[in-house]
Every structure is written in C-alpha cells, then in structure tokens.
Length: 468
Ligand code: URP
Ligand code: ZN
Ligand code: ZN
Image (cartoon, rainbow, N blue to C red):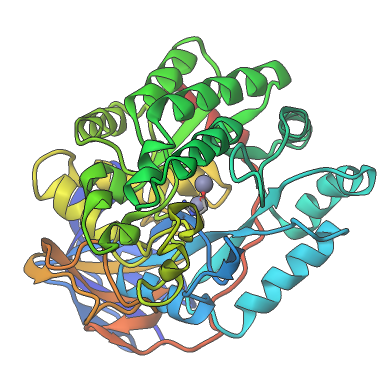
C-alpha cells in the first residue's frame, strides 16, 4: 500500500526541511511541500524528524568468538537494531576454519535468512590465505556483491593475521576495488603484556585495559596505514578509540592516503574507570580495543566533527554478564570481548551529540547512515531520503526523554552499559523498504523480511570521503 509521511522535518546529511514523502512499492517516489494521494495511508510526523534509517557498518551477530558465541542472533539483534533506528546492518562473516570462502558466506546466509527483520550485507573476514582462498576471494566478492573485507591485527588465538596476509589482503583490495577494514591493535605485544599481568597475579577486568594500551593501537594503525598505502588500497580503520590512532589517521589523510575511520558510541561516552568497578562488574565493559581515559573522548568528537573519522559502528558483540562474561571470573583474558550496542548506537549519538550541541543533526545523519552507505556501496539506495531511494525511514521525536535499561531493551543480554542513562530523543516508527518494522514503539515486523543486499564498489564516493 502507498504511504504518505506528512508534516515531518526531513533531515539528511545536508538539509533539514519540512515536506511530505510519498512511498510506493518500497521506494520514495515523491518529496514535496504537500502530498495528497487518495489511496495512501497517511503517517502523521508532526513534530518529528524524518531521517534515513541508520546503517550500522559493524556488527557481530551469532558469531563464535572467545570460546563461545555472541548472545544476539539475527532475530534479537535485528529487532533490537530496528527499535534503535537502524534499518541496515553490515555483519562480519567469519571465514576462519573454512577451506572455501563460499562455505563461510553460505553459513552466514543461513544464519540470517529466516530471522533478519532489516536489510543486511556482509563483510568477509580474512585470517589467512591458502592458495585456493587467495584465488577464490575476488570471485566470491563479485558473486556475492561484497565490497569490504576485514583483517585483524590482534586476537592471536582466533583471527590475527600476519603482516604478509594483511598486505595480500590490501593487494586484493586494490585489484578488486574492495575496502579493507582492519582491527588495529598489536596482538603480539598485547599477548606478552597479558601473560606478564597474569604471572603477577593481576586477574581483574581492569587489566584487560591496562594490557592493551593506546600505544599498541597507534602503532598498529600506523602499520596498517603504511601497508595499505604501499598496496594502493582503501583502508577503513574500525573502532578507533584514542588520540594515538586518530593522530595517525589525520597524518595519513593529510598526505592524501586513502584512509577512513570509524568510532563507536562507548569510546565517545564511557571511560576506562568502568573496568575498575568491584565485584567483577568491570567485565560488562570488556571489549577491544578497550575503553580509554576520558580525555580521548574529546579527541574522537573533534575528529568526527572534522570528518577525519566518518562513521559510527556499534561493534555489537554481546555476551550476558551472568552468563558468558563469567568465563573470565578468575582471569580477565578469558572474559569474552564485546558489548551490546546495536540498539543504542543511534540514540546515544543523537543524545550525546546533537542534543548536547556537539554535532548538528546533518552531521548526525551523515555519521549514523550516509557515510557508511557511501563507503560500503549502498548509496543512494540506502543512506538518504531522496526520490528513488529505498523507503528506509525513521520517525524520531527529539523532545521525548527516556531512560535506557536492560529491563526495556530488546537485545538478548542481561545488562546495558548505559543502564540508567537519561537520553534525549526517541525512535518511534521505523520503515524498511516502506514496510513497518516498528510502529509507534511496537514491533510489527516479520522474521525473515530483511533482504540481503548485493553491493557495488563506488570508488568515487569513497574517494570523496577520503578527500573531505
Ligand atoms: O571486543 C570486541 N570489539 N569484539 C568484537 C570483535 C572485534 O574486535 O571487533
Ligand atoms: Zn575489532
Ligand atoms: Zn567488531
């Protein structure tokens, strides 16, 4: 059925204006001062922002990791995402342990297909190459419409790649016009520091942060930048947390290197002291890279504002406190790394960013949606409100105040790192390709309705972001 969204304030990455939107067959077909169509359902958006749905470029749903599996799967994870204003996610497809990359991708399709309630794509994770997978990679990227791969410089026991593998990935990235995403921490140095801490009897969660200092992130970021540049590849640094890494990214961009960067809500809003809480509470805040001393937050906000960092990922990777986090009760290095953020990424960035005057609403839309769409080959199908774009739309009331709590969130975990935070603004209605997924704060979506998106590289758009 046709829908008209009436009377709202449309916010894109560049404009804010009052207009109506006509949606037909899942696509925006008209934007005008006043639209009246006899056979259309009218959605009243008076007093609300009408924004493009959030695009979360960094999620780990139903992913085996740290001797366990993340607690949110494609059902709870995408429902929570929708409640939080996100209409597309790009999830990391694990290929470690598979002899064929095609099998890894098939496995990820299987996990998602009957569960996802929002649209999605995959980044393909690479840990090592065999001659076969090295040959297969360009083909599978093309076949599956995957425009991004991911390499880890940390997590020796699971995903860490050698510099040679990293460099090969950059070379293939260059040849295939694929964005290479890198987790930048020096894993070998971290492992040595972890061993030393444990040998000294230091087992509490705070040692997770103390054994992964900002310098190891800065060093790895610089190494990734230089190796990517030698290969001529596009580098996207995931979850940037600190001044050391931001400085390297700024330096590289000033030299004209093709480097983009992402940060995540917790690094902008929480700090290292959270890990020092007694009674193992600090384990709720264990993820990698770790939270930093508070002064890094301003560095990150400034880098976002200056477009030195472009995107906000949730790095959703949830483990319940009374369940899986307990694996590390006697040894911080066994606490599964990750936190639940898919639902609050949008709301926290709006409240801490726009409502507190740090960023404009246009910058917000850019960071939460448009830049990711441009970087990962989704734009202009996704990431904006424009004629011809998918009708992925969020109705957001900026005047509502609400309190975040694990009791009311939709993620499948028993805690929320923002428990008790009062935030400004509320996602009320969410449409994906013109269909309601959340209607006036109630879930009305259908499991399996989310579509896999085959993407196409778009060098022009990523270059524009790199040059900004
Ligand atoms: O601790 C984290 N971030 N867990 C997810 C894996 C990763 O490093 O992105
Ligand atoms: Zn990572
Ligand atoms: Zn991650």
